[in-house]
Length: 247
Image (cartoon, rainbow, N blue to C red; front, side, top):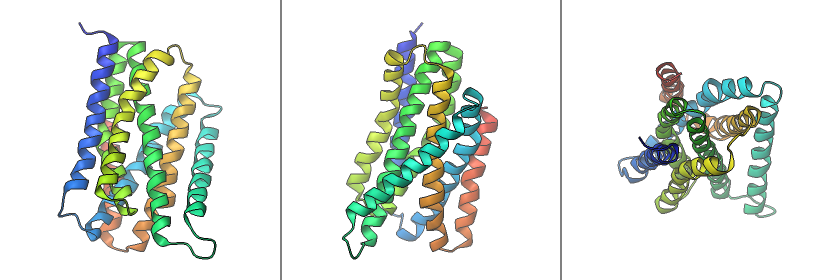
């Protein structure tokens, strides 16, 4: 029988590879036009919004009932300030380039989803350390939303003005973050308190809420189309179905 360490490596690599392949689907599909891309943006908005409320927040509050919501607020404020600083340093004093504003959203999206992938990997590592059954369920739950993660990071970056090469590199970093987080958890986070795990989940939920509410949903309003709303709802429904299949 494989040891916990090898199981952690295998499942975290599968999760990371799933993210990478989903990202490549968007990056390499030459048929995806700017007009079509907004539908991926809309779907990503729904996915990130639903992931925060249906998966991350309930778990965070359950593990850290006193402080989880403070972590959510702290994360939201931190990413607001981060995006504000990126925009200020990217723009000239008198006139701000729309291109730079867009790229700031790509940076925030990349780092937010990368942070979440690190936490995903850490949860896989911690789960297997508790017991193999919990580790397997955790790995499957992570795997369910790795496809939306890959679609989201590539969509956000491409829509923010990054080249396909830059987006491919960014998606590779997001994919690698999952096994890196799993390995770090195995060696460094043994015996970590449930309170700390709850805070980490709360912080991750805050990043997803910020990206969805501040960056993606406003984009759907700028490109008014009834299909935009349908794809936002489709993203939410996809996560609801995932929660039903793997609680």
